[in-house]
Length: 355
Ligand code: SF4
Image 1 (cartoon, helix red, strand yellow):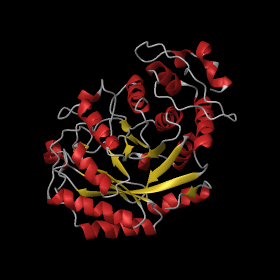
Image 2: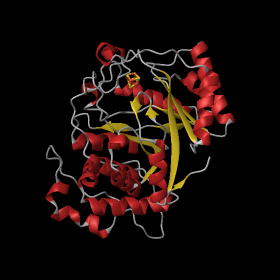
Image 3: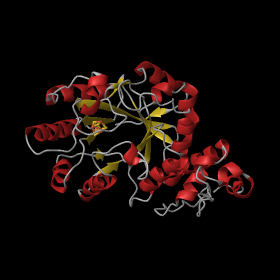
Image 4: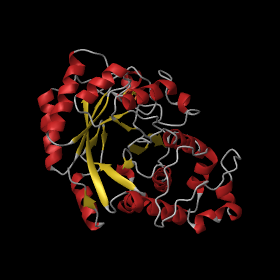
């Protein structure tokens, strides 16, 4: 921990107290920017994380940047592309999601069948040609069911890997045997987000439990694949909920290799449509804190980036973001313009991670 950040503990009331009066405390083991790489910790306490989330921004950024430089190629950003391979009619009731069948009457989102394997691979090739080295595919399912649809997804995974791209899928809950089949097909990572804290979770989703999600993550890990797992801010949670989400992630052993940090995109017709926009600096703080807690993980700046200014995005890179989702659409919501992204990367002097 930098001396500056450490010294906050006795002098900064904001940094010392969480929303519920929880006494925040400085993280137990320093992350020094010196010659020795700090060990990765899996025992982070809520109070330490609240402390980081509330630290003065420049100190937090200094610390996150020091950790980032120790563990990652500085200035490198991975472009990932995310395609919805089966859209809508999901039986889950995630309050933020326009793909839930519970809100279809209000969102008007049309259900689409699973895309053809060839069409998906054509899109992967386009994404690769545009500079993406990771291709993510999402299906609005509660869980994977064995059968022709899953077989097609396995073919998509094989095809994406044959393009020499990383392949990630998000298909809902997954059994051990299905995880094994995905691993055998060459899947790089499986995405399954925790979304929020265990305490706030029931306000957002009632159709499956936090434990269900942790079980799926365990199945992914058991099959030897990388875990892609993160969450969403801006759904009405407290700072402590954000800390608890990060704590759940940072106490997984090993840490998720990939941590998407999302800001809610309030979609008309969903129960969260009236949520106020996320304060961009809150997103910066989440990225910086995730970077400090999980030094080697790839932190992905995900949904909600379209609402950020160029300057806020650059602050996210400064805070330790390794990756952005690239392409005009993120599943069913609008994403940043591709040309704007390339211009931002060039003007900021960032380098695109090669395939
Ligand atoms: S499980 Fe996924 S697709 Fe289904 S409602 Fe929740 S977020 Fe949307």
